[in-house]
Amino acid sequence: MPCRDDSREPGRGVTITLAFSGDPVDRIAELNAFAARIREAGAVIEGPVDRPWNTRDVVVSDPDGYRLVFSTPDFARMRDFETAMRGVGEDLTKF
Image (cartoon, rainbow, N blue to C red; front, side, top):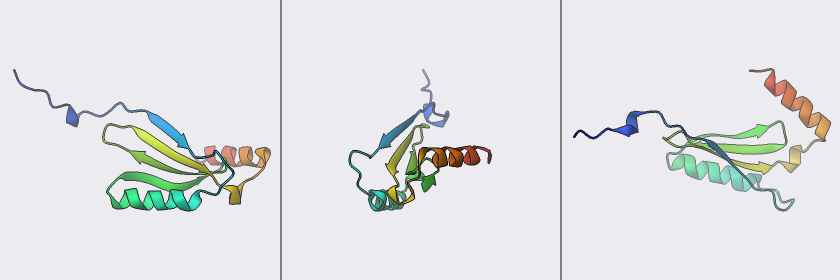
């Protein structure tokens, strides 16, 4: 019986978000270094990207379509809730 090669079919992955926010410690440099290391290793990534909701994110995609979002608060850009929501609204109008 022939073996079916599933590696060519598109994956049905999901997105999983991992947030680093236990203490109010600036982790931006660590996230940037992580992104550089995994990019150099050949990973498919998006970012680091600054989000309007006061985080910096790195999105890692695997061949099966799974996306891992590594996120940390960006205290240097921290804004109040209303300002952040305006930024989210402006960001959504770009789509």
